[in-house]
Length: 114
Length: 112
Image (cartoon, rainbow over all chains, first blue to last red; front, side, top):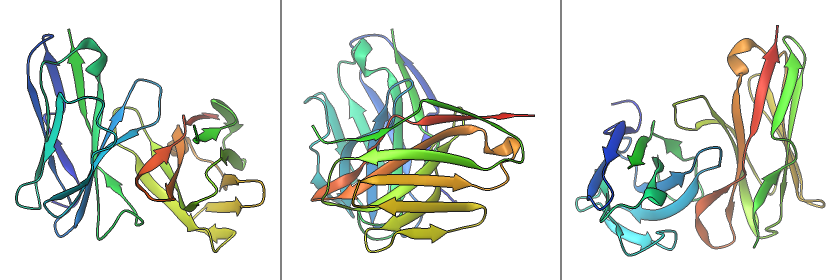
């Protein structure tokens, strides 16, 4: 596709459930980023991949959050035992090479934990 | 902690006027700055960027100004149109951080 795609677009989960959010970056983009955006706030960095290597996971809020990109293209953000405070929009972005280049964002996945 | 912030949460302008959105940053090690536009229900859309070795950069109807002395960034939109209505975020990168640091955003409202 022409841009970054994410699925699902909306996800409702009961507290305690596990969820998996998918990101398809722009074809050929080496770098992939995940961000969390709370209502009315700017996105906050979660984690960064260069190809399949997770180079920075300093923004992951707890060990319930896990991200992977096993083949250096599609990435999955997994949240285990979801809590109400996990409710947010999860944004994925990709860039051609590194972190100091333009990041192009997908539409996001809106997660609501009840 | 260090962060990127915006001076006004909402900016209302008349259609056809110029808009100026301001941003203050505090990380002096940041060397790459970006403006994004976010419409409701969509992801941030890249508008324009600037690196720290420049103080001005122009695009189509948009200009970004960077003042490193006072750590200030601004976005100027010429001849504002209804389609410009959105939340605008400035973001910074650098100083060893891999991800972008975003401000809280300014909601630009266009009056007919």
